[in-house]
Structure formats: structure tokens, C-alpha cells
Length: 411
Image (cartoon, rainbow, N blue to C red; front, side, top):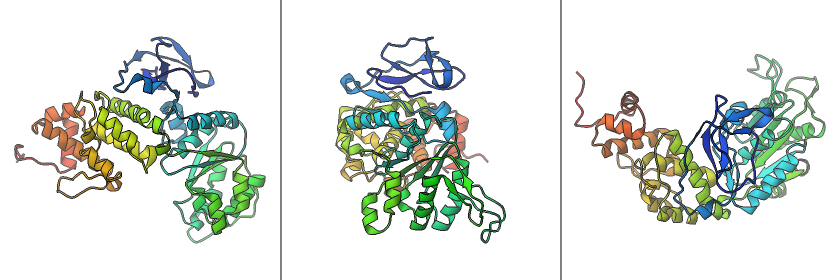
């Protein structure tokens, strides 16, 4: 589905689509059930049902332009994309970035995206690919910080059989895989200088050789790079090549941290609340005034990723039909924010959990425990509260080794 921008007030992904599966966005009452919205590449999608939206926050807070990027039917599936970071914004900086993206996306210019961790740099890269003339070509991602130098070179350029110990067959690298499309080099500021020199050559003439080979390979690849580092400072330290920086810096997008987008914090939180509430089929009534104040005043060192995780967790633990209160943010919301983002919630064995150590299994177990406690440990009622079948809950209870004295053991 193509990007829709500047189409009025609140845009809510409230329509369910036809068999194509792509959501349809509406603006106030500008679309009605059954109307058609022309999507990308001539595809017509019919809006079949609509869910009413009743925001708890002041409606004036939703007078903004939305760039709906939470599109999973084509974007997520084709690109293997983590599309959970919406570009929902009233921020002038974000609107300016989107305007620039629309201008440069259809060119072949190299683009450098700079911003802190969690600001959505990968989403921006995918958006550039999605609205470019390369949209139907590969979108390949490489995390330059995740691999040591020797493995990163093989990952990028491939290798011939016998190029090194363990190279039992020829491997096609990411540059070849992304031929005709876009290669996203994430965390390029962590790339070794030797690899940087080879990247520079590809950017200059679109050619390279595999490790252990002598055949020159020609490709047509658009490179989008991202970093959370100050590359000019890295150049001064001798950690980054100035010539590569200039080659990458044809177009630079600076993504502001969430703390500098105060007008967007509640908007994005509300977006995620609706998203996660729909996913688990739970009715939530928005955020309390106290909760919104906490959200606005927090510094968000983890940016949108931190906000997303916090809202997802709060939707899991809030009681069905209730608004999200401060304590629901982390089971002790005030403590979370007072600690600067370190969750002070206690686990079942009494140990303090840090937000950094939480994972999906921990969150799931605690949500199950809370549901059981709220329903007096009656599994059928707890399953109904969680929106899953009693059989599914029983499986999860056994998986997490949850027991209670009121349950009779099978003998």
C-alpha cells in the first residue's frame, strides 16, 4: 500500500480489508464502509468493516499529519521488515524528513540516516525502498556491528569455494542478493576500516570481487546506511574514512530522539495502545491523565522502542475495559519513571527485574499470573480475561511451571 500523507486529522487503521490483508486508513468520515481506496500498483482494496475510535486524550492532540507505515501486507512480508515503529507525528522535524524522503526516494542517491538507537532508522530505510522505483526489488539488511571483520566481508561480498578454512562452497554476498534493490547497512559507524575501503569502491563503480575470487562482479545497488554515532567525530578519532563519509553523505536524514518530539509521545503511545489492544482482542480505554503526564515528562533513553515495549506491557497487564493507569505501565509506574526507565517490578521469587533483562517469556508469565490472581485462580475465567482458550492457557501454565494450591493434581 502506498504512503498517505497530509490527509487531515486523525487517521486510524480502523478498516479491515479484503483478502489482500492490507489495512485501509481513514480520515474522520472521509471514507465510508464499502468505498474503495486505490492502493499501490493499481490494487483496489475494499473496506469491509470499521471499528469506532474513542480516544481518551484531548481530540486536539490528534490534529496531526500521519505517515501510516504499520503496513504488514506488502511491506512487512516482502522486506522481512520490523514494521512496528509508526511514523505518527505532529513534529515539524518528522514532517520535514518525510518531505525530503519523498523527494529523494526515487533517485539512486546514497542516503545516510543518523539517530539514536530506537528512533526508527531501519523503518526509514524501508520506507525509502518502499516508495522508490526499486520497491519490487530486494531490500537486504546487514547489521555491521553484529559481525567481526572477516565474517562481515564474507557476508557483504560473498566468497568462493576454498577461499578460507571452512569455505566448502561458494557463497553469494549481500551486495549480489540486493542487486536491483536496496542494501541497508545498519550501524555502519562500527565497520572496520578495511571493510570501509571495499565499501567505498562499490559505491564508486558498483563493482567488487568475492573473497578468494578474481572475477569482477557488477551490481546495481542503492545503499542506505545508518548509524547512531557522530561520524565526523569518528573521523577525527581515526575510526572512519573521510572519503567514505563524503560518499555516503549525499543525502543525510537526522532522526530526532523522542525526548525532542514531546508533542508526539502521547500520539505514538496511543497508536501502540490501539495496535496491541486489537492484537490480543482486549478493550482498553486509553491512558489516565496521570499516565499521560508521566509519558510526556520521561526522557525516553530507548526512544520509540522503549515506548513501544512499555505500552505493550501495559496493555497486557491492564484489566479488560479499564484505562491504563500509572501503575499499569510497569506494575509500579511511578517507580519506573523515578528510576529513569529502570523497571522496579518484582518477579515471582522476589528478585528485582531490570527493564533491560525483561523478555517476552517473563512478560507472558507475569500477565498469566495477574490474570489468574484477578480471577481467583480459575483457569477458565483467566483464559477468558486473556483472550485465549482454556486449553492454550493450560499449555502456557505448564510451560511456565505455574502451580496453585487450589488446583488438584492429576494422578
